[in-house]
Amino acid sequence: MEPNDMNDALALQAQVAATSYRGPAVENRHFAHVAVVDGAGRLLYSFGDPHRLTLPRSAVKPAQALAVLETGALERFGFDEADLALMCASHSSEERHIERARAMLAKAHVSERDLRCGGHPPISDEVWRSWIKRDFTPTPACSNCSGKHAGMLAAALAMGQSTKDYERPEHPLQRQVKRTLAELVDLNEADVTWGIDGCNLPTPSFALDRLARLFMKLAAADLPSATSPREAALSRICRAMTAYPELVAGNGRYCTALMSAFEGSVVGKVGAEGSYGLGVRAGAHAIDGVVGPIGLAVKVEDGNGAILTAIVTELLHQLGIGTPEQRARLDAFRAPTIKNTVGLEVGRIEITVPLARQPNR
Image 1: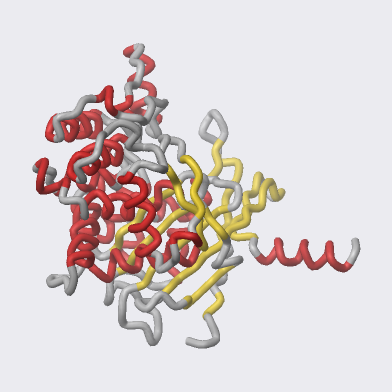
Image 2: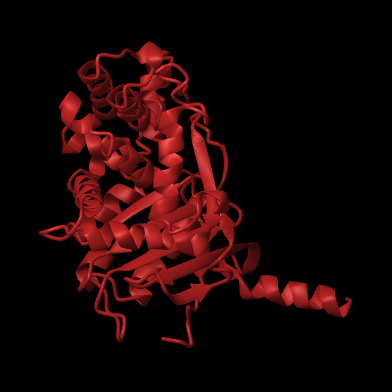
């Protein structure tokens, strides 16, 4: 092996965050990156490349919801906190999710035909089995992103704009979303690149530590009294997500379990293909020398969801987030076992994410 190849191999090995075993044999190694920031957005801890350019996908839904909220759409159309939680959701297409999405459309005086997301198989296996039994064909309101789309239709109307092509990058609403997102992660608009998400909306790419900064701001804003309209809006989003975690995800899903376990002190959101953002309120962690809120972001290179939630859960322990009892409620996600088709345990997953404390701390 040439020296450069050896260095590359060693660098990759240093980013191995999880190893899956079948019996005593290594089956897969999973690479990941972690960024943890303090209340000023400074990097506290890292693993792998904390500045990896990342598509957070649905993990940025709180930022998109902020853009909707700042149009005045919630007040104009009578959306409540549960509706706001659904705007931030990647929901499981349970009946409560679909019904609320349709109710939001009715409040905004638009119809399901106006949605520019498509129906798709649900995230939930339980819901999928139910649909198969009923020979049910999902419609756009069944999309896991239907709450976000319903909110954006309302936001376009609140801006005095047409709902036609609201999903297009050139629509005034999406231009506002882009400005809002860049401001929230403290970047110039030109420093954020955009693609198209699975639900047909623009989706951003930026450095991983900026995702941690976004969630730190969510947690920082969740105070009894906000100092600015934007902080008040962020606080409202954080409260909505943590008050209605069952709407943000669904039965058996990690976001729901996480926010339920920590009872308002932690806000978290998954993104497709192995991204996660998490904000922790001041006083809900045990990091030496840090008294304010923190933000955490994780990216798993191969997009494996079980590995992602295992890493996030392990980091909760390493950073002393919440109480031991709260962390214990997520034990099922921390070290998932591998079983075969007859339920025999045939393997295990080992998480190894030694966080490096930044020397300037």
